[in-house]
Length: 362
Image 1 (cartoon, rainbow, N blue to C red):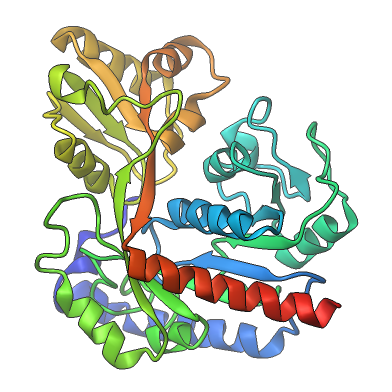
Image 2 (spheres, rainbow, N blue to C red):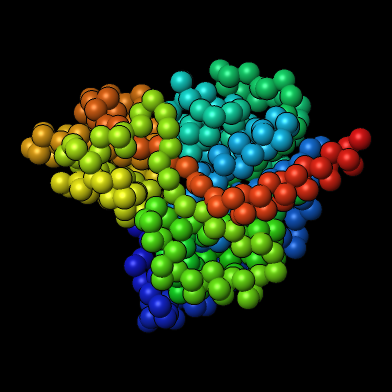
């Protein structure tokens, strides 16, 4: 489903006000779920990556950045994901060469290309499987895991966390500030702020990304006692990197992520001026008709198809026009880059969480 545009209006409109009682019920149920759940504590540190709102804010790039920093400190990490959009309930170790997005979800495929990734609807059961070296799948469980990096688990009370990050879209903030369905928040903001240790503001990719985005960051720094860090989207590297020739080649860009305009803007900062921009809902399941439409657009303009890594992952293993689209489309890898000061603070938070649990374990 596409998120309502009025979620991100400056003030709640009629629809939001009418849905206020449902939003209040949703928030109350979330609070009660946390109050009634006794979380499982894994035998090693758990670092959680989440966001306050429905839709994309940059969780996957942040999870990958945190994993690189953890590995740089020495411990071996593994990802734990719900496997949103997939059919397998888990615990299942994701194999990016064999598994398909319709089975395990698109984000776990990207995570698994980096390091061991287990999907499990029951996050506590997933942590137990990691600890026991259990789980299904063609990829064997890793022989040793020192740290779990939990993807998108902020609103899940079943697994105790040692360090929790929330990432926020710097341009959109939390919209009208109301809870689903009256707004984009997954739970009341004050309740969620109590669950996190640090907030990362995703400034996007434009050189002047910080311009006009200071109000929400200022509000966070006033309402939240922990660190508020800032990061930008920059082109990554990889076998499908395309940014070196984007400025010289006509492209047709398509994306089915939380904020497609963020991807299109990133292409613009790399010098691309797409002849067509096609946006789909988040986690969109592409159809043969979608593929034929995109292929025809590319042929009509003599252009190359460019998409996100997550969208290309969802095309893997398909047949017909979808297979042709997967073969022709190039993915633009991205990553989050922190200023040196904020990266140092991020490393210090990770060291503190990992060190505290390591000392307790000894």
